[in-house]
Image (cartoon, rainbow, N blue to C red; front, side):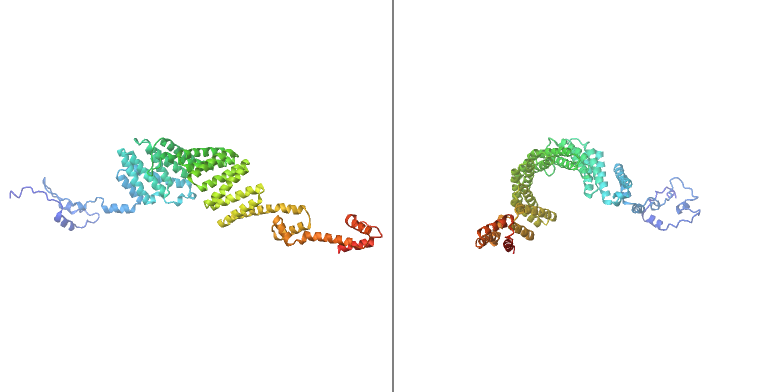
Length: 522
C-alpha cells in the first residue's frame, strides 16, 4: 500500500487517449445554466493536494485566430488593402507610406481637376494589381537597400519603376520616380557623379515629353556640363557627352520654332545654340541640317549673304555624306538666296543642279519643286519657251504624284507661261490692223492655238497663200482695167485721182464717175 501512495508522474496531453476524450465531449450547456465545462465539473468541490494532476482542456479547444478566419478576411478585403498589410507586417513602413501617398495624390488630382479633365476615366492605382505588385517589389527592395547603405541599388530600383510606368503611359508616376532617382543620385559616392548626370538626362527627356522645354533645357544643360571632358559611354557604345549635345540641339530647335512668330531674333539665337551643339557633337549630318535651318532664318530677315554662307556649309556636308536629297535641298536654298541678291545667273545655275539631283535621286516631289522654281525664274526673265518646258515637266510630275493641289497650282503656272509665249504675237496683231492679222486673231479665238508665231505664219502662207498674193493680184488687175479703158487719158487720170485721193468730181462727169465707182463696190 505504501507504493500506491507515492506521487504518480503527470500524464502527457495528446495522443490517442486525448482524441477519444475530445470525441466524447458533451455539447455546451444552455444559456444561463450553472453547469460549466466537464473539466470544471470534475474538479468542483474536490481539493487536490499539492502536485496532484488537474486535467486541462486540449489545445484544439482553445480559441486562437484560425487560418480560415485569416483567409476569409483576406478574401473580403481589397487587393490593395492586403498588399499594404503585407508590407507593414514585413516591416517596410516607408514603402507603405510612399505607396499610400501616391494613391491619395491621384485621388486629389482627379478631384481638383474635375470630371471633364479625362483623369476620371482612367482606372485608379489601387484597382490595378499588376502596378501594385511592381510598386511593392521595387519599393521594398529599395528600402532594404537603403537600410544597408547601398544607394546605387536604391537608384536602380527607382529607375526600374520609372521606366516601367513610362512604358505603361503613366507619366505622372514615371516623372515622380525620375525625380526620386535624381535625389538618390546626389547621395551616391565613388562614381564621379555619373548617376547624377544620367538622372538629369532622364529628367530633361521627361520634361521635354510634357512640353516643358525650359525645364528640359535646364536639366539637359546640367547633363551636358557633368559629361563634358568625360569618356562615359552607354551600353550601346555611344558617348554621353555627344548624346547630351544631340538632346540640347533638338530642344533648342524646338524652342526656336515655338517663339519664331513672336520674336524672330530670339529664334535665331536658339538656332545658333543648336548649331553649336550639333557641331560639338561631331554629327556632320545634324550639323548640316542645323546650318540649313539657320540659313532659312537669315533669309526671312533679308540677310541673303549670311544665308548663303550657311547654305554652302550644308551643301559641303551633304557632298561629304553623298546625300543627293540634301544636296538638292541646299541647291534650292542657294538659288533662292542668290535670287534675293539679284544674281539671276547663279540662281539658275543652282536650280539646274537641283533638277538634276532630284532626277538622279528619284525624289519626285523635290523634282517637281525644282521644275516649278526654275520655270518661275525663266518666266521672270522673259524666256517663255524654257519656262513652258519646265512648267510642263513639273505639271506631269504632279499628275504622276496624284497631288491635286500641286497639280492645279502647276496647271495655272503652265497656262500663264503659255500665254506669255503668245503675248508678243498677239500684241503685234492688235497693233498692225490688217486682213491677215484679223484672220489670225479670229483663228486664235476659235481654236486657242498659236497662230502668231513665225512657224504658224509660214504654214499659213504656204497653205492659204491667196491672202497677201490675192491682194497684189487684185491691184494689178485694177491697173490693167484702168489702162485698157477707152476713156480719154485725162478722164482716166482724174478718175484715178478722184477715186483714190479726194473722191470729188465735176457735175458733168458724175454719171461716168458714179458708174465707175459702183463697179468696185459690186
